Image (tube, rainbow, N blue to C red; front, side, top):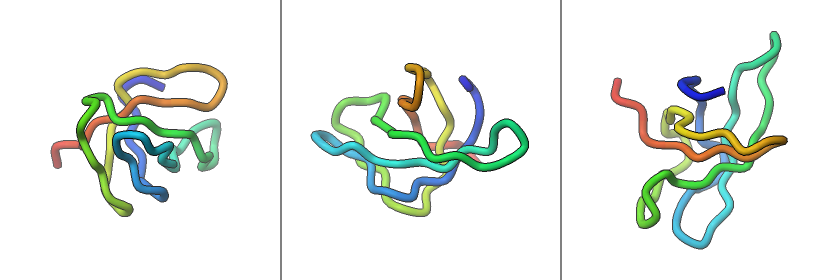
Length: 66
């Protein structure tokens, strides 16, 4: 999971549980998402990269550099 890219479908920010869609296992799955930097906000539609994975469905993400 770490290093995979995904698209934000639910706003990620301090005090919020966001959502990202990540391509995995031949499909696309939704994961709960938290910012890797505590005060960062990431809007819907942004591309992010997974920094840390917490099974079964939580990820910590950062904005992807495109």
